[in-house]
Length: 251
Ligand SMILES: Nc1ncnc2c1ncn2[C@@H]1O[C@H](COP(=O)(O)OP(=O)(O)O)[C@@H](O)[C@H]1O
Ligand SMILES: [Mg+2]
Image (cartoon, rainbow, N blue to C red):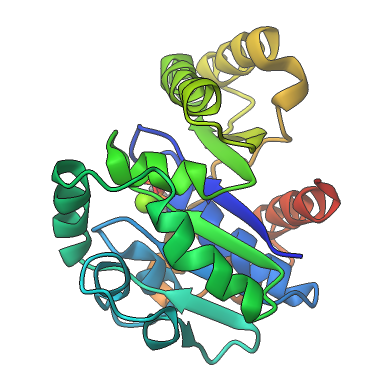
């Protein structure tokens, strides 16, 4: 069985890419076969993995290449990728203009992932609203919503939750919200606590354990390493490991 998790939030800088890459690699370290798909024109999944950006997403969605041509293996055994680069922005525009069905991205990716016997597909998305983001949600069994709690950020979660509800109600989507992941958590600041309480009141059972603000997560992109490679004993690695365990038990 292949489980697809899309990481989404219309806000930028909330830890989507950090979460997508570390979740994907964390699952691999638990023995799973994982495909990481970068649907953000910034192409930062490649950066954290120490790889070169490439127009994998564009070639899959627009240039009509086969999944086999764009799904790459990596040095990390059992970690496969569809990387992105700035051409993904063209894909976003084209998909916004063409009337592709909401199931378009799903159809391009998921059957191939299933026939390759992949256990998980993790999709990273860009911080904007549009056809490609909605297709990425529709492709998923579950949507994971990172939310930076260092400033009052609940409105971002409200808007993505509203988008998800609409896709569910109007477009016959069978998935659900996997969880809301507080990021940049810092227990000494009032903002962190207030935001977390706010989210707890509104989304109670969907709230996951927070990822603390940690400089080492920034260093991952500089070093081209996941948190499990950079320092598996760090608190950040332990927190992402808890997320991995949660996802393994989900569904
Ligand atoms: N918990 C954290 N603590 C400190 N820095 C973080 C944390 N999570 C992510 N970052 C850093 O913050 C920046 C934005 O994170 P990123 O994952 O790229 O967010 P998004 O994909 O939502 O735009 C990056 O430089 C990243 O390394
Ligand atoms: Mg990102």
